[in-house]
Image 1 (spheres, rainbow, N blue to C red):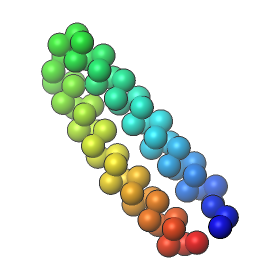
Image 2: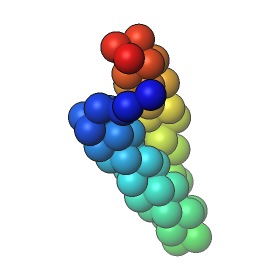
Image 3: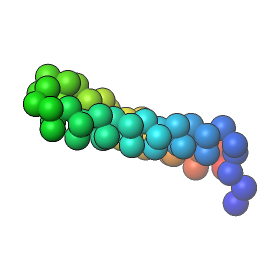
Amino acid sequence: MKRSYRGVILLSIVLLLNIIFTQYTINHYYYENYKLVILFAALNVILFPMALFIYKKEVKNR
């Protein structure tokens, strides 16, 4: 039941990036920079499969 530090740190980094990209998306939407809104929203969507991949790899190694 012991987790590796590498998996926890990587998932924490992905979570931090999700929070940052979401905040940038909201801020740029407020200032009507729609190209950047689409960019940060796409980056936010790309991070989700990456987090799933990291999680499944860590569960498999356990």
